[in-house]
Length: 554
Image 1 (cartoon, rainbow, N blue to C red):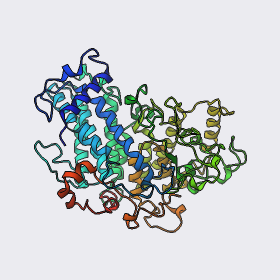
Image 2 (spheres, rainbow, N blue to C red; image 1 turned 30 degrees about the vertical axis):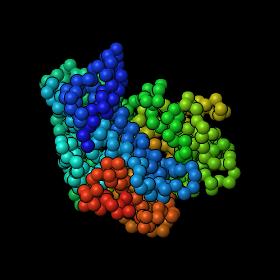
Image 3 (cartoon, rainbow, N blue to C red; image 1 turned 180 degrees about the horizontal axis):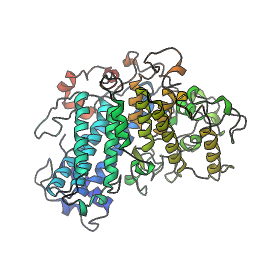
Image 4 (cartoon, helix red, strand yellow; image 1 turned 90 degrees about the vertical axis):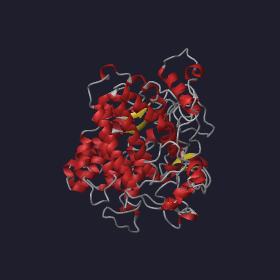
């Protein structure tokens, strides 16, 4: 688990480049100060750690979304019979293990060193951000893998590590986040001459926004526990009310996009999404066909597709049409092969006609070379609040949060609308036409609490997290057992499920024994190579370990 010197050297060199300092200094000469091959003998200034830590955390999520995105049906594989489409895994591979690497290696002891150095220098804002990032990393990792290593993770000299229960990890996330809040609230020390902005790719050194992010993390932590007798809707509501105040508080990591190393992992320059296609499920949520987000009164009112039901204004921004201009999705495990007419097959996520995508292809939604990658948004938290209030029975509060969530996400999406010369209509004008009709629909946007359903809340949250909130969406699906009704029961009609219209792949991966995935296996080239005895204690050697339900969802 310990950070290697050469990797540390690479991180700090990248950090120096990212923050534009010491531009004429050789990284070799600047960092040749170590005699310990396993770690640096000298700790550098706190702001030099942050760029690499933050960007690699985003990278870990994005990298693994190529597999998790299939599980949750944001997208699926272009071709038939893909393992990940069927909730499987590839044995002996590090596929889906990048977040593990990001949290334990890139963040790892670098984050510990940053916190320790900041404490020595009384830079309490760095200390606070450090604790919050550590907590956020543990939250993401445990929601992704289940049992993980926390207590022994960075103990010097260890070669094997015991796993901690998810219940413990959740408690540790709360403890670290509260420590972060305490330090972010301090006004003594060197807070007045902070250098946080020099390395902070998320909030550019804004301590108040980091405080609100911390409360958002507490809300996420508590909102996972809806199936527990100890779940507190009031805590969720309280935390959300102290968290992000508007889209202007959204937490996202910035990328420059000029060269590959500083380009969004989802950008065409990186070429990591060429083989994926939007799912039928996400298309149904946006094209007016999903039973829970459908208003029969809007049939034939779409301003572009004459005679068809009103499309969600977000549809052409988030998704890609086929060559014939219609929006379709793929079925997990089948891909585009179900469309025998080539022009009916959905294009890739950049909406290009060929999968040979030029590096300079124009940005599309979050899939642009310099697009920021969100980590937490105001709309996401409003849906978390709406669900908690709905479970509590406070439907007026739930409706208010639901409305704010939808409105905020539409405002967010509108910033990506562009007028494409290849289409005859004014896309901005069409967006506003559709939005006006959508928001006026009592069926889609209830004006009374009686019209609000849990289906609407969770499906709108799914839309708002498309393309970035993979772990949060998966946590939602698992809390409701993928295909559960509002009361927790399951029937044969998918339209009655909380996630109406969501259908598990058929068949599932052979070793699943008929069960969907509930976790990813730990990273192969660490745990399955040298930590096997500890893995065996938690059942991690079983071929269907990835189908074992998480503690938080039980």
